[in-house]
Amino acid sequence: MTEAPKPPPGSPEDPRATMLGVGCAYTILLLVALSWLGLRGRWSALAATAIGSHGVLASGAVGLAVGVIGHCMLATVSRRAPAIAELEERAHELLVGMTQAAAFSFVLTAALIEELFFRLAVQDAFGLAGSVAAYVLLSMSAGRSVLLLAAAHALCMGGLVELGFGLYASTTAHAVINYLSLRRMTCR
Image (cartoon, rainbow, N blue to C red; front, side, top):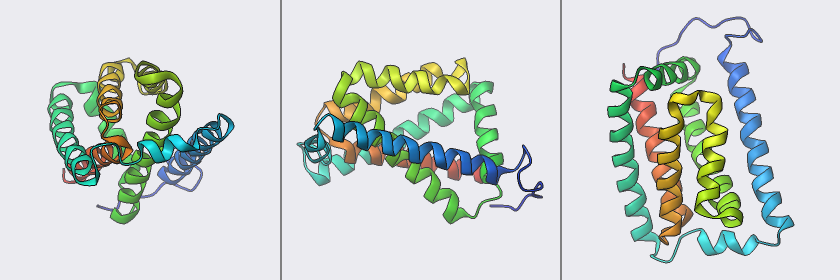
């Protein structure tokens, strides 16, 4: 990644401050997911949905395939939808000052925590429709233009869990989409 001039620490344009805030939000999301499972006595849901009923190889392969297909679809939409391209540009601006290792760690961690929250905690309590609705509601902060994309993403990831491929497949797919999107954004 190229190094951009850094604004003063704490300024509104400082990507480090934004990333710190996002990191705190993801930490809270993880704590809420795990606490919610614990309070409901549903720790067994983690073991039951971790790999899924199809096994490690099938779940990993399906997750990888869905991730690559999802990235290709997102790249196509991004070229045709200025609002999505603008969101990707904002993400690029946040990540441009980070090392590649830090940026990749961030997007992979984000995939893991989002899948634990939406597919494990929310989907376990409210089903697929509930997890899709929650994902779309939390995506509203990015603007109305992403709601259909967010719904499709949530339906696809939740569908992997519903079809028995488990969190392994949904997290793999999500991480592959994030990783390939990051590569596409930084190779401009």
